[in-house]
Amino acid sequence: MLGTGIFSMSATSNAHAEQYNTNYNFHVCCSITSGTLSVNIGDSNCAEDGVISLSALTNAHAGDYGSYSNDVCLSSTSGNIDCYYAGSCSADACLASMSDTTNAHVADCNGYTRKVCCRVI
Image 1 (tube, rainbow, N blue to C red):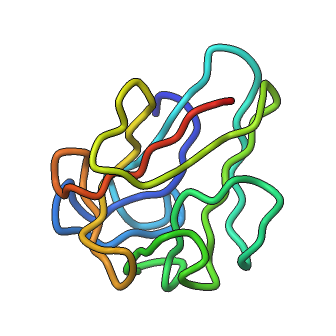
Image 2 (image 1 turned 60 degrees about the horizontal axis):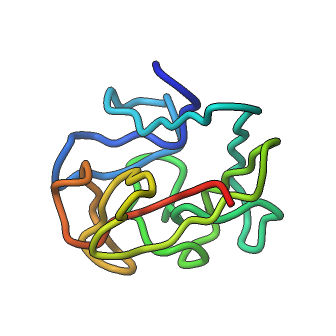
């Protein structure tokens, strides 16, 4: 693994998601140049920035942050994390893509037009 594990996928396209490193072999990870990253999965409104939301802890559909009770949240010791959804991440990091805003499948960044983008601000 390179970086911090954020969540895992059942495949690189048309996939289900789960909390990091439970059953699936395809891991979404990221790193920063200084400081450390922390991941938390919990109820909506976590103190960290929301990345995506999972319908369950494993074998899950995904959605925008706050869609389900298992929000994947990310924090950093070197600044605030800002995650958002867009057609392109520009200079920011693309973590994955989703087929829709809720009840979605996930894929690598080439799979769907709805990208999950994050940056340190």
